[in-house]
Length: 418
Image (cartoon, rainbow, N blue to C red; front, side, top):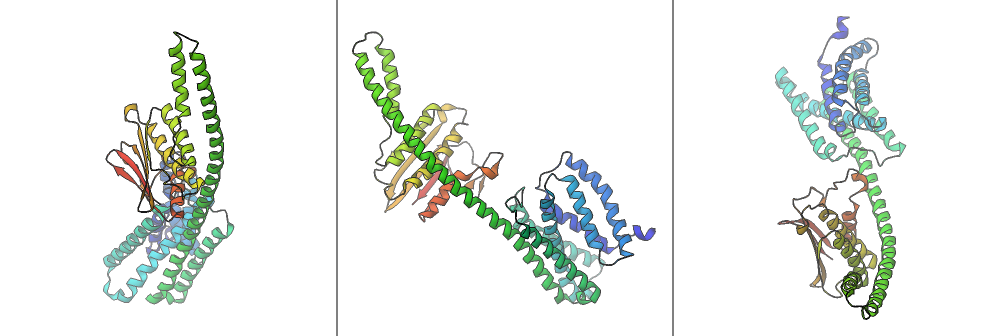
């Protein structure tokens, strides 16, 4: 019985694999009472990670790390609210990282084994673990979202991840029983296998995510085109009716006395609809008419300075996409400004040495969080939001232009050169 409770050097794998798994699982959705579950789970699982592998080792060899891995998988499944596929994907990644750290340690230790004592070996192990895990966190884990495989529905991706992990595990076992692992150079191929496995795993994730974002952007731009046509029809109809009503009111006013003031107020309201912007570009005029209405409704000062014919070489759909999204983003923020006197949006468009210069600015109390040059969406469902400015960036790249977003004093400024 005592042999089953014995803790050996091999049990150092337990904290290593748990720490590696934490790198990949800490951002996953958690079950209620997560920390209570985790503490109770560790109290139950840690003794099992000692006893069960020891018992199995007395009957079959080569199953020590696999047993610990399966027990850790059960622990995370009990604590996390994520799908089992997501948990397995993360734990397989952790297995590759732990193997990478171990093989790096052995490749450095074996050529100089005679110079290491117990303290030196421990220091080397901790150094390799910190280095490998730290780089993994910065390069992979930190960049993974709370749903690392959300865009992946292909069975072959999961199959590849499992096959890679099993291959590395079997090779590691063969190295141990044949004695090949006693040569430092033999650990280099396993290190390459671990790195390749991680690259392919998260390469698939990045590829699928990029593909999903491209499809979402294309769908958004199609919706923008449809919305543009509907808006055009509505604005034209409103302006036409406002123009007709204004003339009818003028005729009525001629026959009235004291009630003229009431009709004058109605007439001024109609003027605001009839006097839409005239920039020399009908697509831009349409967008600005719509946004002016929204600004009046929300008490936002909207300043417009446009050089005539400055947008003549842009496609109508691209004009709608760029200015619709930039102004929507500004209006959305200004609506949250509690002091209505500070609500402000400015638009300037001009040509600069044959290029189109665009500047959209709005009052902003504090710098927004940025990621890859774009503000991070503040909505809870970030997966389905934040595409407006990405659409602007996509359209800007189409014209080989530049887009810069940043703060200038208390203004958030979007600057484009097209």
